[in-house]
Every structure is written in structure tokens, then in C-alpha cells.
Image 1 (cartoon, rainbow, N blue to C red):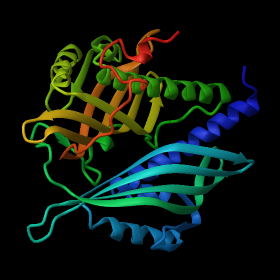
Image 2: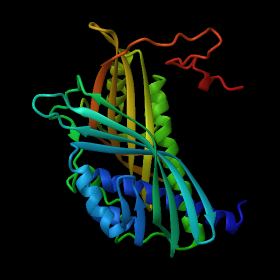
Image 3: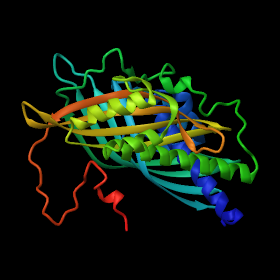
Length: 347
């Protein structure tokens, strides 16, 4: 059993992960009050094109992002080192920026690979960023050709407080979080259980495992995927029919924020979904969809945390031809879209 010191370290790391993900939500939703709340008073930011204090940084980043139609800062690989009331964190960030086309030119995707190197200081039970240094690893600019038609059935992302994530009472100021150590550890366990349910769902859709998908929802749960709005079993059938037409899929989850409120929890998860599809024109096309899962999880009686309601909020998409691929030698273990995949064959 973990000691009280070990438990406190886990709680501190969770608070820091949440703070970093809240910053990403703030910049992508243009919620500048939320961005500001992630930093301590007098914090410093070094963004390459900018270096200065928090009061200078917020108007700068607001102006810098205003030129884009969409932004999506996907965060992963968060590592935290604790040193008393100071912490140092490194986060990998892939930042997508959709730039509107001008004078009849196509839109462009400006994609940046970077790392946020942060110092955070303890503020009571919470942590705030006091110094951020952005390290730039790579970038690319690509014209956007074809896109998926997000018609009126799809819930589209907003860059303001009308975005669906603000319809959920997530991280509400009037909710009293547990203060005792036992209650905070239980909240940590609940968050982990919900993250694992999100990952199981992705395994289910990528391995074409309808029972695994179904197991992530309560029987009366609802799902709004744009192409489908309804209850669990209808969605599982709908997803299976659509996925079966594809050559392969891979759903990456990032930026998981979970707010546990007794037996209900609200979560937001970023998803970059890759779909390899047959194409009459090019043979094979890659369809990439960027979206967020805005979810309500429930814990009923003694059952685990399962989805009670899901709304998929769509950010951007692109459809590109697949060019030359590297052939895999027979010694490479290849993915399978059924239970013959390696993940089901553990010794």
C-alpha cells in the first residue's frame, strides 16, 4: 500500500497534468480567463516569437491565434519531477492550426511539434505555471485539399463559450472537491478508471470488437457521432458497418480532463482518428478527423464507470492520397482488425 508521501506525489502530478490540459483547452477555445488562471501572478513565458510576463503574454497569444480558423493543441508524454513546492514538467505538444485560404487559395494546415518545459509552484492544493519555455522540434505547412463534409448533423467545435464543453458542469467552481486524503485518492482512482474506459473504446473500434465497444456504455446510454444520434446498441451497429468499409483505423486519445462529481463524472478528450480507406481515384486515401469526446460517465450501484452520454465535437479533417509506403518484412508483427491481433494473444 502506498505511503501518504507517495499518495501525495500522485495527487500533485494529477493536479499538474490537469493544469497543463486546462491551458490547452483555454487556447483552443479562446478562453483567455482560463489561460490566465493556469499561471501564477507575474509568470514568465518564452514562446520564441515572444518573451515576457503573463500580462503581456495573454494579449500576444490572443492576437497570434486570431488568424487561424481552428487550433488544436494535443498534449502527451507529460513527465513531472517534484521538488518540494516546486515542480518541473515536460509535455510533448502537436499543435494543429488551420489557416483560411486567401484569394481563392486552399486553406493550409500549419502543424508544429514542440515541448512545453514548465516550472510550476504549489498554490495550496493546486499548482500554477510560473515559467514556461517552448522548445520547437519541427513544423510543416501543407495545403488542405479534400475535407469531410461536416453537415448540419455534426456538432462543430466553437472557439468561445458556446462550445459544447461549456454545457457540462465540468470543473465547476461551486463543486466542493474532497479535502481529505482518502477522498482525493478515490477521485484519482476514478479518473484513472475513466481514462482506461476511453482507451478501451478506442481499442474496440480499431480492432472491430463490438462487444468491447458496447462494454464501455450503459445499455441506455446515448451517443451523438454526427452520422448517428441514438442509443448504445444502434451506435455499435452503425460504427461496425462504417468501420468495416475501411482498410484500417487508429484513434489517438490525448488531453483527457475528468471532473468527478460523486457518481457522475464529466470528461473531455482530444482524439486524432486516422482512417485508411479505398479510393477510386488514388487506390488508398487517408482520412484524418480531429474531434473531442465530450462525455458524461456514471457509476451506478457497484458497477464501474461507464458512458452515459457522448457528444463528439468535430474540429477539422483532411483527406489525402496515400503515396509510397514502406513494405513490411515477414518478421514484422502486423495489426489485425479482429481478435487475432496480438493484444488478444497475451501469454
